Image (tube, rainbow over all chains, first blue to last red; front, side, top):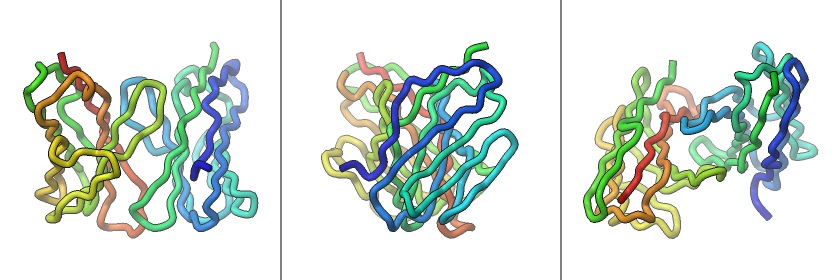
Length: 110
Length: 117
């Protein structure tokens, strides 16, 4: 079983829709959770970083962590064509060991 | 803040030559830098972890004599692909973690697309 599971998509939504991206994991010791956005031929860009459980909001983005279910989510409100990218989840136990999902490809259609 | 600069962004080289890729943390000091390889439509594959002033730790299956990593300062790590072959063609990405904050997230460079002809 992989440490981190992420549906690769692709996911297509109309502009303005709410997007829900998810990852599940198997290691209950994970404490640090991150979401990255990666445009084609670019490096991943950090969107959200949370520690332990709970929600975090930044503009149109909301990250949720449910440690009891080993499930994390990223919500994008009022999605825009510029949000079209691959979204990677990442998580870790200690400070410098991280595990990545395979990424979900998102297309927001104008 | 937390900008990581990677250079070059793309490079084409002939088979048998060596290529050096630089990764710099511009506005923070990085104790640890990571090097990844990414194939099309796939996730990041960790190649090695480098800590400033010490030898890099390579992941299983990564040839350390082929992929030479040097982390000489808290702001610079380099990856040298030696005697490159077409199968080394890939997208290489570095990331860095700041020393200032324990358990800080990774910040990535923009990657280097290597094509070996």
